[in-house]
Length: 357
Ligand code: SF4
Image (cartoon, rainbow, N blue to C red; front, top):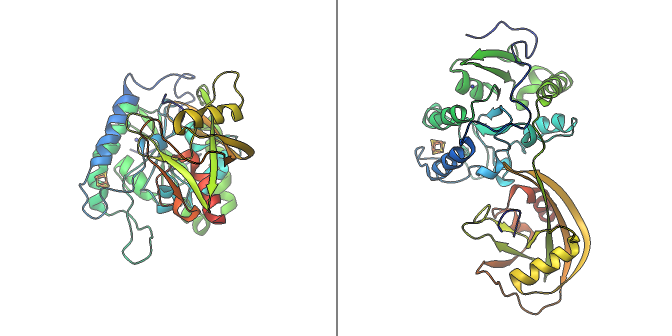
């Protein structure tokens, strides 16, 4: 089990010229009930089939949205396939440029922003190979109600719109890059900062100038970071047999239902990670393991908590796996892992295993 189962422009000028010096008070919550209402909205998004060519699959789950309580929303144009595979916004080649600069401040995008897109589903380019395409005007129009609802519920003081599509979706008007890069607009009581999309940055500005501008903006916004999220520690087991890894599927009613995961669970107070792992595997799968080396530790901010996840190699000392809570399990090859839905926190490990397998 994992952690909790059990949007009239201002003249071009200095970046952030119109930005308020305070966003929300430290650690304050979004408007009453907003997180719950947005969770419900994401269930609607998940079921939405309004755009015939892209509907019904490959959307980000609620768990990938970052923090709803910071008063800061970052809007992209649409998910890219790399980020969808990672179940994590902005993890394709272009997105990692944003992540690289915010990490210089010791933060992830999810620590500072609520992350969303103008179009919620992945726009797939026609052809045999999986590739991204720009969202169509009809798709942007169809999806506008979701973005409007998110912004109404969250009522952010600052919205950062990355790329021309996102800027238009938020502002309802065209902006022109690179002229408008890092320009701030006042709209409906909030500040909207528009950024050149990283995929065009080198061509229009050069990497050095673009990265420096991102860092300036993130640094100012980071002053308003709310209190850290509560953190839970989770131990998970990498159990291999005949070149396959043991994975289990999360049940309905749990955090991240339907996702696959490496078995394990939340550490109790005073318990070592190794003891936690042995106990969880005994309770959930009725198996005994020898806990080996820790191969990876990652921290991932979910909307309500930060999960620190420790992966250990384990040797199976039992002959049979007997799920105690009716959960499904499978033994899968490393290459297959990337084709299954895993929680965002597992993305780094999945990439490493798939590359090695
Ligand atoms: S892009 Fe938006 S409106 Fe279109 S199917 Fe997906 S969720 Fe629905």
